[in-house]
Amino acid sequence: MQLSPQGRRPFYLSPHFTLQEMLESETAERLEIDNSIKIPPSVGGGSEPSPEPVEGGELTEGDCSRNMTSPASQARHPLQKGELIVANLKALCLRVLEPLREAYGKPIHINSGYRSHRLNYIIGGSPTSQHLKGQACDLVGATHGDLIKLFNLIQSLGLPFDQLIAEKFDPRKEKMPATKASAGSAPRGWIHVSYRADGKNRKQILYR
Image (cartoon, rainbow, N blue to C red; front, side):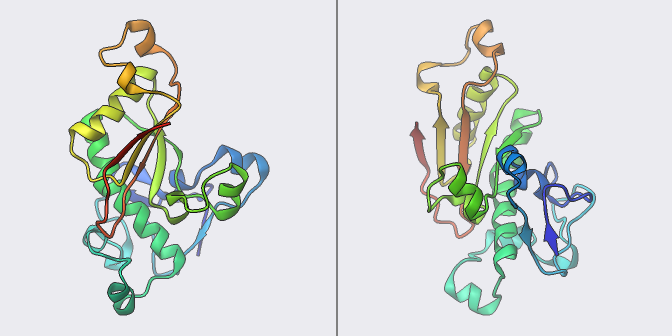
């Protein structure tokens, strides 16, 4: 089964996030780059929001909490590449994005989630980017003030991120509450956040 951003049936990774939005890319669509992933037919997506949306009891929240990428785990339950990407994306959603969404209280826009190697190369991404494994996403809020709020929330909530990067903005110089003009303006940058399902999360905070 091949899953693409244009898939009609929602494939829920968590109550508020779908696999489709984690595959969407304006660059890929504009340049007609395939950013889909292939997974076995046994891994079906839920058509309704659910904490455990994958049919057949596979790749549940419990799976994501285990060290799925360790050699021992892979030996017992080997995952195909597409399955592993889905598992990583689901772990990112359950452990980081859902708690953030609940605290934020509003929808969060995902600019970039999973990237194919070709898409990553075209946009100048790092050859070792966590986007390639489904371990990272870039997100924004509705306004620049929301962007700063989201960045600060990820830290204050104590979420178990691997890397948290302020891209093209510096919240250290723009402390909240911002002025009304600044808070209501369009986002001037984005947030990169990643999570490793194997638990080896470094809690790195970077500014670029």
